[in-house]
Amino acid sequence: MTEHVLVINAGSSSLKYSLVDSASGEAAATGLVEQIGEDSSHHVHHGPKGEWNDDQPIANHEAALEAAVRAFETQGPALADVDIVAVGHRVVHGGDRFAAPALIDDELIAAVTELVPLAPLHNPANLEGIKVARRLLPDLPHVAVFDTAFHQTLPPHAYTYAVPYEWQEKYGVRRYGFHGTSHAFVSAEAARLLGRSPDEINVIVLHLGNGCSAAAIRGGQSVDTSMGLTPLEGLVMGTRSGDVDPAIHGLLARVAGRSAEETDYTLNSESGLKGLTGVNDFREISRRRAAGDERAQLAFDIYCRRIKKYIGAYYAVLGTVDAIVFTAGVGQHSAEVRAAAVGGLDAFGIHLDADRNARSETFASTDDSPVAVLVIPTNEEWQIAREALTVVRQS
Image 1 (cartoon, rainbow, N blue to C red):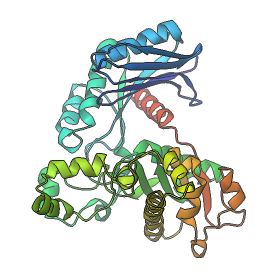
Image 2: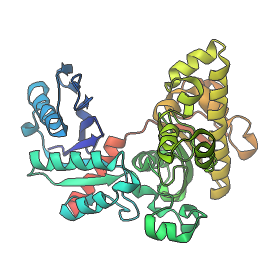
Image 3: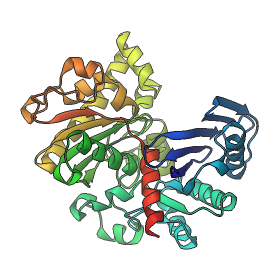
Image 4: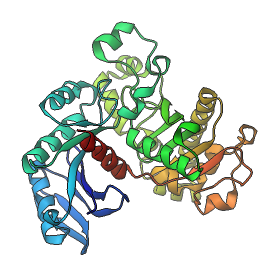
């Protein structure tokens, strides 16, 4: 019988779930409960019977997961008829304690709770999803898969900030990196497409969605990444600024009377593409740019320039590069971004094929390009399912 993993991603006001075939990566069903705790909660379930929608108030995460279980029963597939071997939970921040997925027990929950100050917007919601799922599905093993774990192979000179060393020792101030499940999946898939083992190649992965990050991966291990202590650092994103001068907090406190919390919120939620254009939907920015909107063009140029800077930096870190991989919504679908990001880098051995790139083919580079340019859809749910299954088999 096919082994399935129920993958759960609990956000502050949402619950995303997917029943994944651990061998093929295919989802028997997926669903999303949004606006939890509001009068306008929305639940969509995609199963064997097609798309099913339900709009009614959902008070909390427990009610959301109960609604998901009911949807499986009425819309399929019934959970009792599926061989579910584990529940895999996405947990955003594992700090430096978790370099691999781990079986969830009371000790792990306590450890993740202690890490809440590092991810106050994410870990509490992840913990709530874990606690609810363990109550409702007590007979299944539950596994935590951490966004930060893949980047725990960064060497000290890559994860240490040039700040008083006691900040790292006392407060955990260091680079952690995120999108680890995506970078792990995509880099392994790149090796497969190149017909080589992951430990034989060097790749630069560009995860470009509403959140964006770059990673330098040598021999299957992350050696540098653009996100840092939080997901704010690095590339320009939908609503996050990415790299800015850290003195901006002090300046705005002096000249605008803004608190650190206010500036932090703005840099995370009102900056990036949204700050530059008023919208964070890259498709809308592309439409405006095509219509001659100067601010949309500027936003596009800033966005792509930052990506190109990281490609150059990570090329220097790795020394040699076998592939540059574009993934996630923008990375996978925007030929213009890919062209702008690698354009002019022929001296680095990066030769883009314009026609292949326009069609978003898997190999978007020329046949004779020393560095392959790949377009690979990410599949974080499958990666979580595989990692959860590995933990269960080893326990």
